[in-house]
Length: 401
Image (cartoon, rainbow, N blue to C red; front, side, top):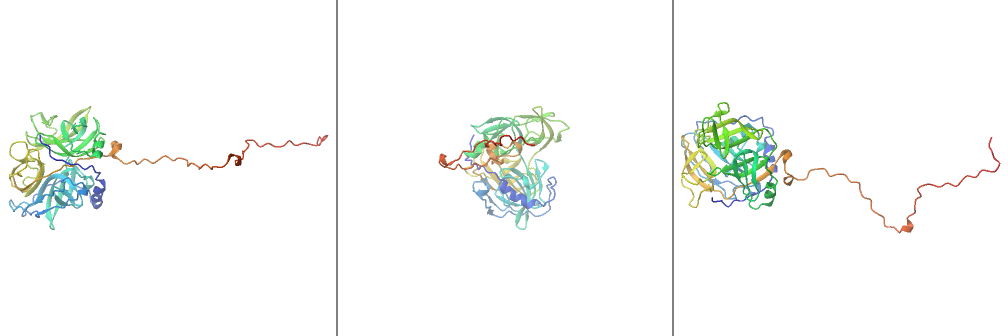
């Protein structure tokens, strides 16, 4: 299998994300994500290359992604986006600078959350609309490929298995990231952000170690779907009328959340779907993914009509931008290759490995050492331990009264 020239920056993005958090602390509590259709003309994306600051953990290798104009088609407004966060200031995904405000609805694997949770390397799904010449996020969903216990880890090959999902890292010789990876052990709970190759392998763009919050998530392509079960990667999932919100179909996308009970995964909620998640609700899309090994180009359930770059090969990392039809087909305006994938190791909570955190413990107090005075021993008088007093002699014959 071909492996692209990946590069990694191990960087704790909390100082960057803190800037995002500061601008939204006054926002009201966010609601569940809502993808709204609007009867308006399709906005065009400015023909420009987004400025990407490599100091912000740029996952695009400084290549930039040129977004071409798309002619109005179905009368729908908005751009559907699936991609990896590569920078902040605004939120940079797929080379697009996406603005946000208190009205941006944010969820994390289906749970309402805030922009405080955004980190470089996370994969997001969102809808943005043109406003005052800029793209503003209407909704944003942080989507982990899998979260759960590590069942196998290979430090040499830089791979691991989580909840039956094969994961490949691209540490590219970065010592800090490599040392952090080696602190992970079988049984540790992690959340993995990344996109899948056509064989189902997750190419990790971020890994977070965390404490047990009682919720496990896996999303991917449903396989071997029956009335009572389905498979994602190497994970078999029980399917019942009680846990299926919408029944998956073989080859379609699926998200399963549940819990670990007595070492076994027990699904609580299963949702399935086919095609683009925002098909029929937006006029344009920007989709990040990997070129399939065989067959026509398809990303996130959408058939792509358009030519790949001449040097593109299977498993190349690409971003497609173009117009989406009401049937969910995408007519590509641009197909850009990405040269790099960022893998950022960052743990949080009580399980954060010592190798990945600064020393914050308060040092023990030590009595100050008094300097020795170098004096000749003959000048140092000896202090007697007992003060001797001379005996008192009384006059003879005195007996008192």
